[in-house]
Image 1: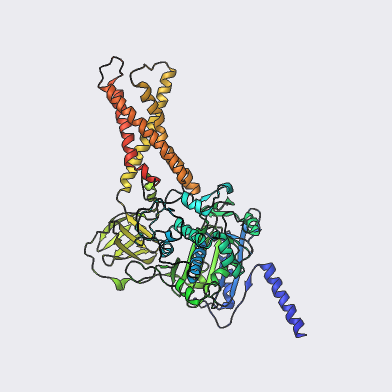
Image 2: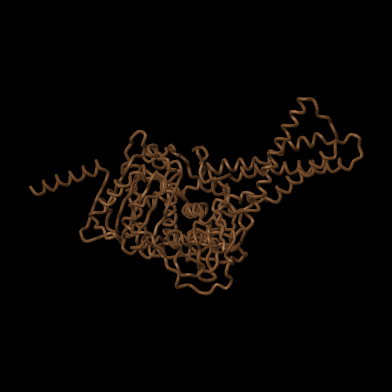
Length: 618
């Protein structure tokens, strides 16, 4: 009879799980870092969701420790307009959390003796793979894990909007190689391209596609049956179909707006294309704290993965943990990674000491504060003990641009997106755009206050660049950005003025008032073509907004347009100068030649000054 009752009770529990989409396990004597009993974890999350309905459209989350999944829950709607409920079997995009599969794969090969973490990755890549390096220094897997191989952001296609444009990983990397901006090991500049390159190294060593390797060595051992990794999800038909149920939403202060499916395909897919259920994500996250370390033959390998591999300058504060990042809360210190795509935001975090952790994914833009009910309020490391002397008060002042921004040529003006003007206020204190204050504790150590207080480090690279770094975010001092903006304004005004001049000529022709003169044809052609110099700007604006930049082939194309314009402008300038000093009766008014020389000279100067050759790294 007891067996029958137990069976009935078990069936009822199973039915509850099936129809509510929520799974709860608990241990009476264990608590979260915020002192919530395990048995109350689910209730706390559900209470938060009920009290904050305006903060999300849909999200899924799971909480775990080293022994079990404590809770899984799904909230809201994946399609609000059609009232499609979010469930625990709904799929979401991991974004950059996907990079953790790269670092796990690398450590597996390290454990097998097939990958030396400190060897130059050119040892494993096809000969001559790189074509855009500035330095001959070795680039190691450790550099890729720490995001300090030297690449800043560039004009390359991270994702495409049509599956026919999806290409093999190696081909995508070759076509989109960014310029190397910093010496390996000197600057932490977060790089999707570098992470994807690490995935390609896995391919080169194993002879498998990166997707096949991950399925065979991560997804299958963990029983992750509802997760895909290829850009178009074609490696898991179930996920591919379920993804069509997920819509993206953003809130700009006027309520949640539906952005559609946002189906974009990440060519550099190891950097951010994993898509799946919250249950599968929880299995992956829990593998980092399980005592049987299911993805490694030796516990020492997992311990190495979870140990610091870089520090914040010389402060001794850990920065990267072989590709994982550290987040400090008032009640615990978590390792993990955040992620974001056009559709989703996510995070995976765990405490390697206690084994407690959580995963979270949403299609509602930004990350929810729900998990802080488990972790406590964010906190940071205290660096006051590192205070020393400031030998040059005020020396930190200047304009800083994100090291991850476009750092070469004309389009480095996009650095304005991350521009950080730093002004000195006295008493070793600086202001950063009125949004944050910086207190310099020594020549190198600073505190940045923006709600919380964050440790920062200032140093000079071997090339003389001044770097201000906050963990995975680094800024380089660049006082040329504002002059570049002035040049850009002149460039745009000149271009549109040329367009109006062409319009005037057309009107004059129609009115039959245009009198021919020597050099007229070339000057007219130059004026007609001059608006074409704005084409690369328009092309980049369009492509950068939708696809994160141009491919190398597109770069060659738009530069070809610029080069042709440069030749035409030079020919027109020379012709106008010859005509100006000619005594021919056929020459036109002197002022027309002077304007032509000035206009074409300015066009040539702007093209050269703004370094169009270097934009594309060719």
